[in-house]
Length: 104
Image (cartoon, rainbow, N blue to C red; front, side):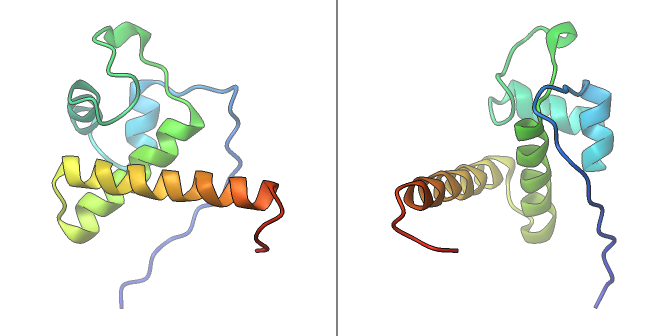
């Protein structure tokens, strides 16, 4: 089994990343990020490259999509859909925890 390197850190919502920062953090080319933005799968889909700034949510989403595409050879649209479902599942679990209906 291949050994994977684990990197830990703290995501800060107020900090933003540039296109290059996001691509580097995901270990992909900037073209990969641009294709997903232009397809509406990542970030806000803004056509203004100069205004692209990415949040910790965008970073988490991009990393998850990249991993799904790589590990399962998923099409970008399928990886985005699976990511949407994972994010929705997390939101619903958070609501259940907040309501005191589930323990972790």
